[in-house]
Length: 82
Image (cartoon, rainbow, N blue to C red; front, side):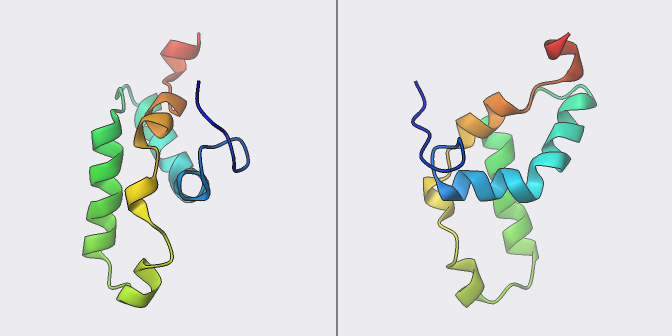
């Protein structure tokens, strides 16, 4: 069972990723992609590396504690819901 300590999510960091990127990942899932935790994590890390966000702001979220599997389980395709 997943521990839900922050707005129904494991932690604040996982919630923040869903808050800001949830629509994007759900669209990818709806396009027929089965999202794996590794894909979501690599996507987020890649976005961070490509951005020109000063390191001070990068430190505001600890991506090391994001529950990537919880996010992957959350984004289901329209076909999986039906």
